Length: 119
Image (cartoon, rainbow, N blue to C red; front, side, top):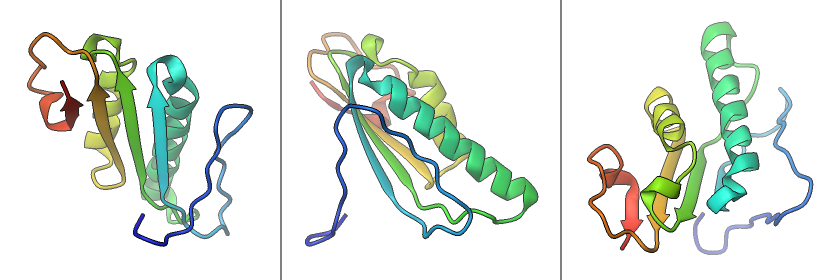
């Protein structure tokens, strides 16, 4: 987003992301804390499936980017972190993530370091 961009915000409740082939592309910013990652991880998997489908069958869906901001006390509490790293590697520039930790006391593994901010 840039200054003066229009955004839609949805907090909790029943939500999903299901773009249709004729829809305009949207860039998603997904924000999760702790176990709140569960529905957003499902959305990331769906986006990855659509990107994979596009690469194999032609471009039916117009997809934007997806950026996940995910916070937990420490890296051991970041659920699905290896899967999320795999999605970023599989779809560089299309799916990105910034992990934020608030109470990390141990060394952060090298694989996560470039993607982690916080203590």
